[in-house]
Length: 330
Length: 93
Ligand SMILES: [Fe+2]
Ligand SMILES: [Fe+2]
Image 1 (cartoon, each protein chain N blue to C red):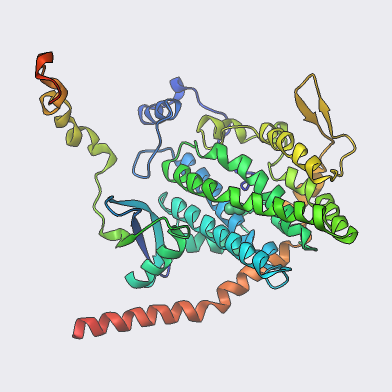
Image 2 (tube, rainbow over the protein chains, first blue to last red):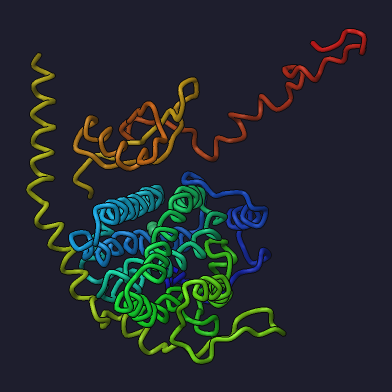
């Protein structure tokens, strides 16, 4: 999940009988799968939680460009470079679709970005890992975008209209991301040298567990889940989505001819799902707290980008004002 | 506060269709809003024409106006072709 821990500010989910008339009408609409739109009445906590969730999601798309940006100048061929740039440009677009949806709730984009830069807003833990070799570009597209797709496909049915529509747009573009990533790996495995094949396995070894952590803490450790599910801004639990991702990914792993760094990973005939090993949650919480391998570097890059671009934004405003004056004078 | 103006973006996806709202962009002026909208909403040939309108210039119905505003249309079933029953021998009309 791109928004891994979203505080709802709610202690216990209210029943319809405990709600006032406005809130009851709101909840009944959600129960009937009617979308909530920007101008409709909504509980304050629903609005605030959505702003937190959508902004975390948007920040993840934006910060998510950085690990891939590392390889634009290092891509092995012009074709791969163009594909990578197209994917990165899509991610910028995803961030902007989401900020746009968030602004319909009355939040301000620049203010939310400032929260990211000052470390007060979260983004997905996955983007705090380094991308060390070219196969990482394949593994990111396949595993990271793959995990994001599992999460985003269900969010197309989220209760808030502008968020749902942004998700529909995003999902249309994501399958290109995952397929280009998988194709990079498949090409290396089928046509590469031994050293290149080793790179693929190395990339999978490093990114496998962090990708599973993208879905957020286990259900037992997700106190906000019940309210988010009642509001339908979350449609499945973290563990359900994680399992779905693993089940669809393992056969693809086998086609590559690679393995996962998990000795406990095996098909469970009885459950009809893959069993898998224990996730190292201490690592996840440390990364979320800001202590992952690249947290500082990611935020510093973002802050520098904003600062170094300040003169461009000022010049654009000055230019727009000048043109407006000239038009008024003419 | 955001430094730039918020614009709503409308795109005509094909000749012959209406412009449809797709989202919003921030820009210093309308010309830049068009350029940003082009990069953001038509990276895969999704449009043949773009409109941008400052969000502040849009007047919308309030959600609580829903009933008085739209109710009057509800009981006028005679505005629909299916209200008029004609014998089969008239054929398609
Ligand atoms: Fe994305
Ligand atoms: Fe993506």
